[in-house]
Image 1 (tube, rainbow, N blue to C red):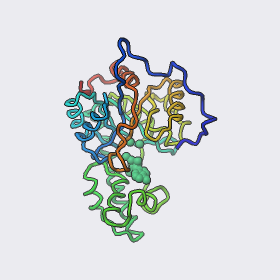
Image 2: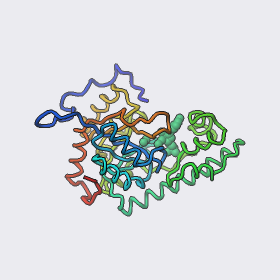
Image 3: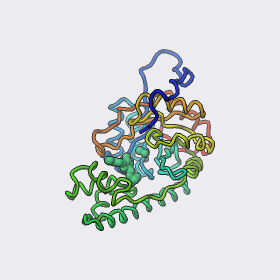
Image 4: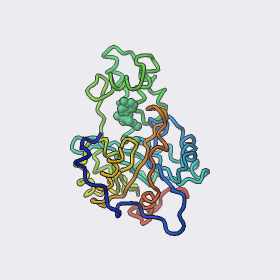
Length: 311
Ligand code: AMP
Ligand code: FE
Ligand code: FE
Ligand code: ZN
């Protein structure tokens, strides 16, 4: 969480930072959720279930941003098309800068871009090897979990710590996912294994190479506001100001930072389905005007115009 006390935060942004109002008659407010996970990484919903829930929440646009994979995007695109929801193909890349972990969201990525495909496969291989390493460490502290159990639960190419946690709960070694993280999986716990991370600057370059726009995910969770100027200078396109773990004050704070660095504003719930309690979809809504700005920037064609956006 953000350590900055409310009193030290910059004042609320001026009107210029607000979303532009639509011309013409007032329409019903429209919202987007541009940060969502499915069972292709550590979420619990299928793309179809996720799109259906988005429709029930009244979302006008959704992006799928699974960790280090776009495998759910083709199905999500079809499901969204059927529900008259605009879809943005995306991914959430685990990256680092100056030793600090941060997540880069890629939007409008060309899923067929060879370099992106190769990179995602590498990130997935790192994740799979890491599962073996985590299980070995658990075995060393006399927790006889088997890697096969984790892979069966994950049933995807991009497994992560939540899958190890679910396996620990399923096999009766822990009573909850939180306990699994607290006892074994968090940093400085016996089964924690650091993961290779692409540099954030390389992640931004990769997103651009694949025709996409790059946004820094949940800055309020990473306590790394000081890296934003460097990322902006390196071509970062957006900042995830709206996020389920951001308070209203944090959102205002990051809207101000986005405005100062001429960054697009993105946002989403970061819903993982039932992975971490109740589904978060619908709880965090990006006003559609910010989404429209992102779409316009993409349409203006920064890099690659052959992008797979349905609608
Ligand atoms: P990984 O990418 O394998 O390091 O795992 C990171 C994932 O674990 C992210 O989706 C986090 O939201 C999730 N995570 C972190 N802490 C917890 C926790 N205490 N309970 C459940 N999920 C968590
Ligand atoms: Fe996750
Ligand atoms: Fe994240
Ligand atoms: Zn996420």
